[in-house]
Image (tube, rainbow, N blue to C red; front, side):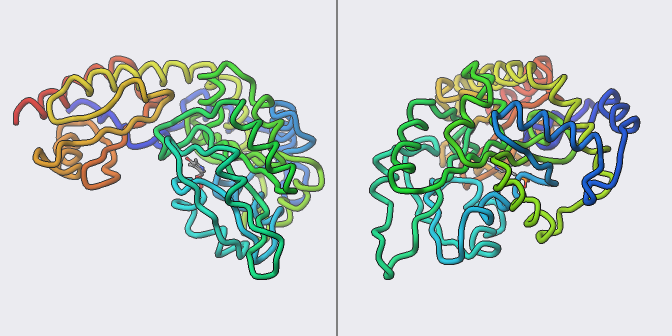
Length: 346
Ligand SMILES: *Cc1c(COP(=O)(O)O)cnc(C)c1O
């Protein structure tokens, strides 16, 4: 039985032998007391990379986003974001549950909106209304098919936000993928945001962890909320070492994942019963739709699973595939062969 080609998510990667070696040899201390040297090294490096005063290592991307939201809002505030954003769908209702914030949801292609959309959503200053406080952008955009935001569009939104005294947060779980596509360094995006989150456990292949970046005051507040949310950890250097290893070894190779996703999309686009525009695939995430009279997404995923390819059914007729560092170009060729066999059988 050949190995399963797992395209469900870029979170399924397992730490390599070299990464595990870096973890077991890491210098550690008690990070809650602030003296884990490997965590300090990682946080300083992330602050530099994103052009911010400070960074904080946290256990998950959700905690990075939620400490940033909690630090910049009050109960009764409103967050302006896209209706397809991760903070709205996939973080357990945390903006409401932890920060008491409502969300004003914008529409727009590929998970993106415009400065005009933001301006139209801002509430008047009047005690009837929730207080507009924070704009959240996701780059690359997960449900938007891994789409990459243009810097111009971000700059325009920044202009409107500043004019109205709103703060800006970047959910940069996959900012590394955006940088690989645009060729821009993380700081070019981060300059327009008060807070930024970034994941080590997606395309970078670390087993655990994210970071949140901002000015000293903001990161002090995030530090307090990390503790409150239960994310203060002790000899955390073991995990931070994996993140440092990922920064050294797994950033430049993201282009390979994007090429693999492009190849998969082009082949799927030529298969019967499946619908995808390969030009819409910008990074490592792709979605395709099934003809409704063919079979459901779940049926197709079950068939693929039995044949050694795993993808996620995310709607009745919609399937997601994500490429990552544990999937080679050869694996993609194999996956294409297997899916081709299934869809041509019927
Ligand atoms: C994965 C992800 C997160 C964080 O998820 P965790 O599972 O909490 O680490 C945040 N935003 C986006 C866009 C993501 O894809």
